[in-house]
Length: 335
Image 1: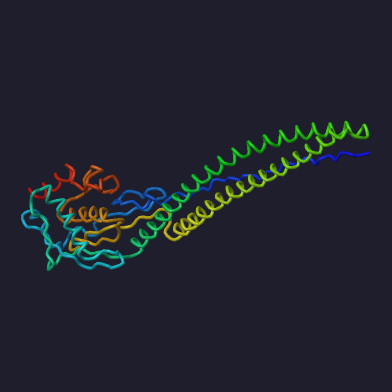
Image 2: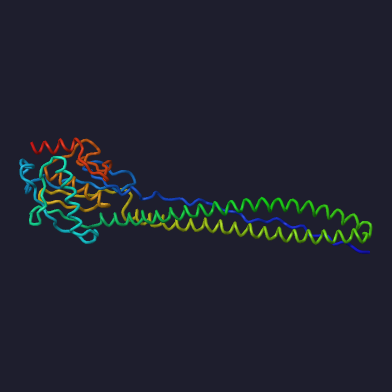
């Protein structure tokens, strides 16, 4: 009596996609603001700078009553090389700041003079160091965000592949089980009768081989799907490592510098101007224009977009132009 061999039904075991979005600590972008405030509080969780007069203009080399009749001659003083700016480049920025006021008044109110007693200095300390470190974090954030974008695109592509292949796999498993059930019923039928005709036996043997081949193909699909799951989870882990590294550096930065801090960005003493911090060239020109405005005898004005406003945050540093309030204040000194 010939017994027909049953087939072993395949199991279904797919890997699991574990996607946990990597959280960011607040980015430092735009937190190290170009700010100039005398009395205003620091913005929450930001680093702000203050511009205030350290003296009451006593002993100034400039006689304020003659602010526009005699140009204020100024020269470059100390320039710390750690700012990464040459004296020639610094002079260009000074001339831009000078032109800001002279273009508005059509008067020669400021004059660069290498021999002048009135100096403009760049003094490097922890304030600029903080700016440099914040910029490095911003640059790393750009890298991380670019990486996340690339990972997202790759993840979406692999995820689409996974869903397509998973759908086919699940359909094939369902079809295989239906075919296997039908085969088992026929096997059971003929085994109960002790034997099967040669033609029937040959047909069942052929079906068994086909089903086993189908099972092998489905197993390959399962392994391929789990390989995709592994790739997807590797992408998530890669993203998480990058984010964790960035967040660790942010934590270190905040532990050293704190999330709230006020400092003098620039100071006019009456006999010189000293700049301690700036984020870029445009920021430097704005700070210089503000302090030169004080040197010309101007006080703060009320328009938040003005160069001489006490808080530097809303000025258009891409186009530094005196506001109507700035011009009125300067003309008041020139009357």
